[in-house]
Image (cartoon, rainbow, N blue to C red; front, side, top):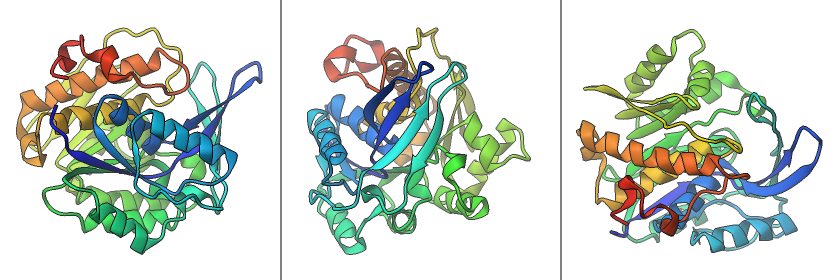
Length: 315
């Protein structure tokens, strides 16, 4: 497996999972952290760019990164508290409530963050997503870092929209549109597209994202097939029937699986025009997402667990 560094920019938090019987289970979470842990567990080189608290939850977060083989790009602990998400679990899917203000994840120093990224050798890809796109100062800093990234760095954007946390919907939509002008891959769910472009059908909304400038749009729809769109083709990858324990982190696992597969095969943004290669990458990533759904708490699989799968034998 080739080694290529991947920078993951965004929040870390602790999910307080509330079951229908009101029992509560605390697990580390946040879309970007889940992506980073997926990459690290599969053997990829993940560098997590996020502020981590010195509180008990922050220690929990750092331990989870360490055991997944993820590098913390900003090693100094912060005095601000850990970001929290209350996740109500039910048959219709999770509902989120957030405690975001003045929390460690988003308290990034521009100079230190820029220097940390510059110090990562052989940086091949950058990811930016979820709450980092809407909470300051990370939102503006992350946008600036993405827009100024080298042309040969693969950029992956995942809005992973959380409407309950959005304070200015129009500014949020405008930021996502701006980021899409630099994005090589934009991963969105059908729910994301309905929020970003409520006036459009799913397909037209995905085409609108392409129109903003993205090279490739990957659309997930729960257990339904994943749709891949570029300027030149549109294909679908089926999702095999899966016994679901919970769906928290399913999309993040897909993104982490894709980034690991893509960089592990020495591929770049130029290869996104190859329909067969892109379909193979998404097909392999779907398997990582499926395995994650079969476990509680966004626990993505490890390298030794997937090496027998057709899309991962190269590991």
